Length: 441
Figure 1 (cartoon, one colour):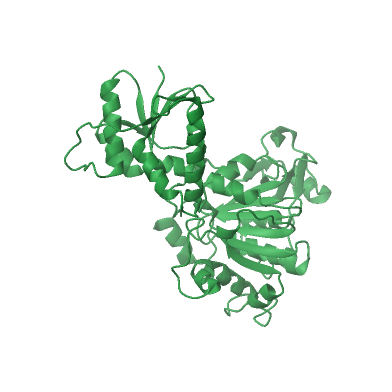
Figure 2: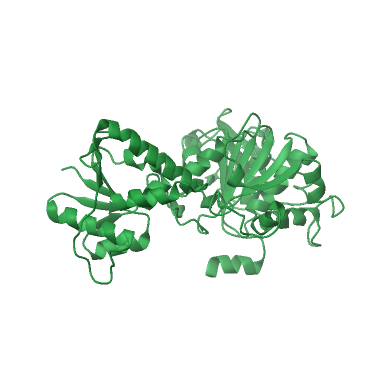
């Protein structure tokens, strides 16, 4: 029997294409949802763009039938705009709220068609709880979700014979026929001697050469930064490899994601000149949110949002007194910005741009939706490298969670592509206090 899915407003704001992703079942859009979508359509945020897109899709569907009677979907389903039900609700649930009117509609449909599966789809956790309490089946909308525990880590540990570890050191290559089918493109491997666990080596699987190759370790460090663990060493290799155009770094606070990315960007831009500019960005949450309520000019308005970026750059320059940067405080962040080598801006302004020959770092990428991630990555022009960093457990965006945010979506989709690499960093190196806080709190 065909199911009937009732879609909440937040599902359509998260993904306006959601109406095409329920197979040949029936979709029901409550009229109150259309009203809520209408209130978002003038926003210049991502929600506003999605609201306008959904409204256009709905308008185009009127050609295939009256929305009140049901319009056919390409996948065989039928979409209907329902005017609403009037089923009685508990006195605590007032009908002047849009959420409660949707619940009333779901109850009405369930009474009219008791044998038909009626499913309410919403990204609102509390609304799913209320629906369940009223006897309505409720689900989250997760078209492509990956739990953090299941996320591809980008690294692997293999136990091998002692002579193979020695061979890797001498030949700078190692073919592993038995493990090759397990390894993904640019997956990092820790080789351990099965007889002596302290005898180890680190390599990266090259899909082109079909073997392990040594990782790159800068002798003088990365702008004064040296890796403190294997994961950071892997991250540095990926960040400095010009053949890898997309790098994703996932890890909790204090693992060095942003610091390593910025240090690599400075090395590739200022030192080597491989890229014309280092562009560092992060969401002014949410993506596209107006920053006009903050006082001052645009630079002063952005400072609260961009301060973590400045902190990392100051550390690299040694401006804080605790940094080990080779340049010192004399030639700082502002000078590089004046020379056009460094640009720091919010993601608000990235839509519609083409970004060629730049080293682009997107910090806090876990707050982006899959659609927003696609928008950013498709901005990449010729010879541009994109680095995305984030922590799936520190999400501020109410429309995404640890399982379906844009960062984990990208990691899962690109995990076997030869131009991308991913590293999950697990060990905090900021301080002992920071590490304890991340683990205990």
